[in-house]
Image 1 (cartoon, rainbow, N blue to C red):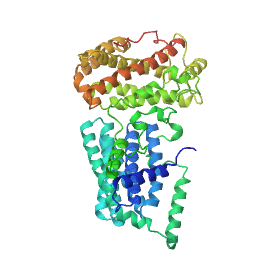
Image 2 (cartoon, rainbow, N blue to C red):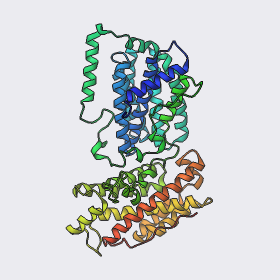
Image 3 (cartoon, rainbow, N blue to C red):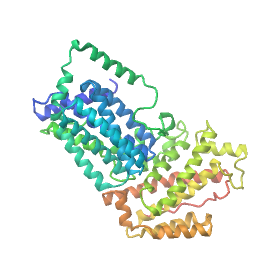
Image 4 (spheres, one colour):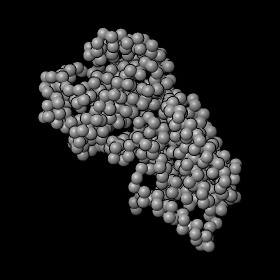
Amino acid sequence: RGPARPELSLLATAMEAAAADRQPEIPPSAWAAASALSELTVHAAWAAANARTLQWGASHRDAQRAKEVALQLEALLPEGAAPAVVQLSLAAAWYASNTRRLLLFDAARDLRKLEEAAAELAKVMPPETAKSVKALATSAAWHAANARSMLWLDAERDLTRFEECCRQLPALLQGVTDGAAAETPADASRVRRRRRARARLERLDGPSPFCRRGQAGPRATSPRATSPRGTSPRAASAGAPASVGAGEGGASLLQRSGREALRRLDCALDDVAPLWAALDPAALRRGDDGGAEGEGEASCEALLAAVYATVAVLDHLGATFAPVARELRKNADKLAAAARRLSPERTLRALVAREVREGACVRGEAAKEGSAALALLWLCRLLRMLHDALARVGAEGGAVLAECLHAAYDATLRPHQDPFTRRVVAAAIWAAPSRADFLARLGSHREGVEAAVVEMAARMETALRDVHALLHEAGVLGAEPLPLPERGD
């Protein structure tokens, strides 16, 4: 039978909601419009939040889905309303994300666009309805931005506001969608204009309007990052039609399904661990995304996706982790530049092997500056320190975070750094927060966060052993076989 078309699934969900609500005064068109509006704001919010935290693959998926829902809204809302809603959702999403990343100039520009779009929307919709749509978009935008910034209490507050907007929206849209649904063949010019606008969007080959400059397109994202298997279970199910329970009202259904779609993260590591799992040789041999056609070799793009996602988490953990995040980003950028230079080689092993052939990496000698081998070597050292610290935190319930970091640093990075750098790192480590504060920053539920830390360490271990073995086989100086510390029970 083939996959269901998204617009048919959306309408089916709206019809189920209308039937369950048992409010004949609210037509199915209002439920469909409310469902599409909530879905648009969710995907626009996460497209911006993911882009600002370097989650390019997830951002592209959300941008594409938002574009599809924007096309559906053309048929559900009066003329001029859908473009205004799209601009409103975009501006709200980027305003919240840029504010949380302290890009204040961009945020001020997006705030102006947000107010202009709200004013345009108020011209084609009743003021109360336009106000509710604006509240829906801003609450979704701030939830995604706060979740990506690990401000969990603020994210929960915004989620509650989003649910309330979802509950109110169908009734407010009743008169609006009645006008859109009442169009007849006599409105031929209006219908033709809408069809032409939809056709232009469907033929659009350039970047999605939901992407900003600097955001990678489909070809620049890693295969793993663009796969649903590369997302957390909550994110992978976002946007799926919800089933109606017995006796459940349509407003409750829309409110609950909107909450489930918007709330993707309970812990900052939820969508990072799967990216490290993608580098497991066993998964690659099964043909999972992230490798080279199932050959069991990790691709450079898959490793970069996992590193950048890890950096995005470290950026929000305070000054203690800032040096590690900065060095990880610097060496990841070097690896990406080397991979572009050595294109079309895809796998890490192929990149290093080509450098060996070209003389950039000589067995028994230090790898040359700017080479993929040197970037990989320092990435491996930095990530081994992070893995060791996470493994100790997860294994020892009463562990002191500073002591875990010190032990991890001594075992991995310290032998390769000069005395001045060692003193700077030691000072930063002793300023580390307590273990309880560290776990609270990663997520709002203690037990779930502890489990996520253990899983993250386990996922990283296999990938890092493989990368380190690759460098050792190539004879890179400094890549001696130093076994990673074993995880505790």
